[in-house]
Length: 363
Image (cartoon, rainbow, N blue to C red):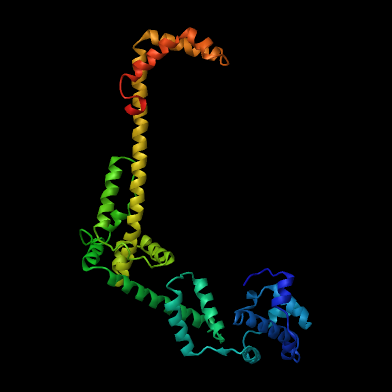
């Protein structure tokens, strides 16, 4: 429920209508205000508010002005008791709703498993979906605690179904390969495992980092996960399990039921192959760039040394540099050529280029 409501919205959504006035006519004080607020809230949300603070004061004030009651007494309205229950029953009846039964709760749980949890993982959105389900069927949603249990049961069931489906998609060899990732070389719980090795990030760009990353990538690919195993799985679902497996240690993963353990490892490996591929590309690009820079430095040093071996070249270059600095706005033919003739410059260029395939070619 948003907190800010424009006047036009208040008058449209939260206006007490003529056919609703008889319901509150014989009520007084805080009961009159509470009934009116509950009625309009139920019509808008399909449920009753869970506490006073859930209802924005702008809504309470707008309704209070219509029923001639002070806004301040809203906090005094009793949430429990016979009077409150009678009011709720009256509002449900007026709106054509009924209370949720045990059977309604089971149907809601099944619906969440089949329709919602296959695409949604955010608790707030799951709860809102449950509210929508009940509103569309003219059912008052179960109470907060019961609704939490229904959602928790649905999440647990969906996880079991999801993990069993992924487990069945894997070959025995792939399952065995995933379990090997968690095997320790001795009985110590802290022993380094292949799984931990795969999690290690690459070092600085260089041949060793490339070799290590390529080794890890090949190791991950050898497990043999089907390429389309998570093709129809929502990214939010993968993200949920990826976050879980990222923080768990090998001994914690070993304790899970086999379908959950294998699913966690499969999701980790699936995403890790993508990450290692990206890392390998980055390392290759950065390494080649470093090689190019080193080659440029080496070539420039060798060119400098070659020039220094010929004093007359250094003298000519000195005169060129001084002429250019002294007369920066001058024309090349008038400033540079007197210090170093064009033919001499062409000879210098040819001499440098004749040493190989050119600057870029040498690099």
